[in-house]
Amino acid sequence: MSADTTDSFDLNTLNDQELTEQVHDDLYNGLKDEIIAATNIFLARGWAPAKVLNDALVEGMRIVGIDFRDGILFVPEVLLAANAMKAGMAILRPLLAETGAEPIGKVVIGTVKGDIHDIGKNLVSMMLEGAGFEVINLGINNPVENYLAALEEHKPDILGMSALLTTTMPYMKVVIDTLKQKGLRDKYIVLVGGAPLNDEFARAIGADAYCRDAAIAVETAKSMIAARRAAR
Ligand code: B1M
Image 1 (tube, rainbow, N blue to C red):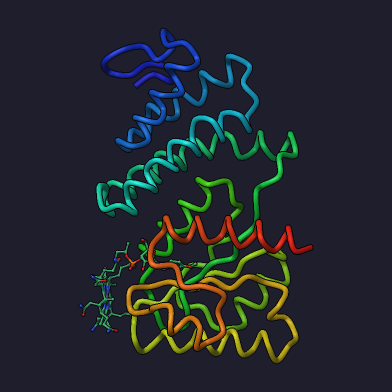
Image 2 (image 1 turned 180 degrees about the horizontal axis):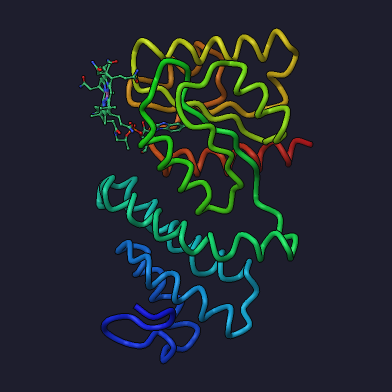
């Protein structure tokens, strides 16, 4: 496929509004090549990278997130959408860095020690990126030292942890307790997620919130950052 056409029609023939709506549809349908083509067309038309990101891609992923939350879209479709989004982001990321557009917040996220499940955590990472966050994804099987090193290096707003096993979820408390011991706990919003967790567990270990799914993770991250900034 060429950089600016689809199988059915030339995206270049659409006006800006139509192309924006087309991007929302194409993201929803996980059409990576079309997202790459449309992103390049917007840039060629002189759109600022941040406008392409917010009006076309982020808005498209917002719609995906809502339908995922409401059970209209399922994991495979969201992964495809997130993958298409990532392809557009890959074009925009260096341009955004040049123009100095600020991400809406920074997140360090990883699956805890002893746990190699990463599909859900990666989905959360991609959805957060789609919402305009800068995400440092630490991968799987992270001991507390990895989290501490990443917090020190990247100075995020949010620490996210994922666990899919009942045997590994208690490790989240090890990380939070270590942050407390080092006097670092209040510097970060701590969000946790993973199928075996719940609100009560998150409260018991001293996290700020449990996120049932990726859409809720994005909403929680946005609202907690906004609240923290307002409080300051
Ligand atoms: Co595993 N596994 N697995 N597994 N596995 C489960 C979790 C299990 C429930 C299956 C079962 O028995 N029914 C079970 C756990 C039982 C328990 O602890 N109570 C289990 C087991 C036992 C194991 C092994 C021990 C099996 C073995 O070797 N005997 C082993 C463990 C290895 C280890 O980690 N040390 C193991 C291995 C594997 C595979 C490698 C084969 C593979 C993982 C591949 C990978 O991730 N790259 C795997 C898989 C795929 C699963 C199931 C089938 C699917 C998990 C998944 O990806 N779900 C799972 C059964 C199940 O959950 N139905 C199972 C889709 C994903 C999108 O959802 O991860 O829940 P989820 O993420 C959601 C939310 O939870 C939330 O948002 C996500 C998106 O909406 N979320 C967050 C997740 N992390 C978040 C972090 C946040 C916020 C939200 O931070 C802010």
